[in-house]
Image (cartoon, rainbow, N blue to C red):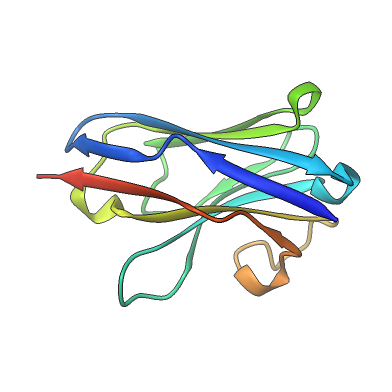
Length: 125
């Protein structure tokens, strides 16, 4: 089993920044691929960003490209999401997720095996 714990959410004004962290523990070989998703009230969970084990490949949703940066520190079993130039529409619960293999389905939330409990991000206008 893999346990994922997110932190770093909070309230920020539009244009501000936050950095989310996701710490993995347990059988971390299951965390080759780490992704961030978000879900706003009344909306479906949506893909935000994904990173491979080496960090060589990262992909982003169009809505966050150029503003968000995903990174990881494998020595600390932690993945980060640096969020800059935040907008009110970025407000959501943010979840990190993990799976073993990188495939074309990285944007699809139900292909991930492990999930954190989520951290709330609220961007005020």
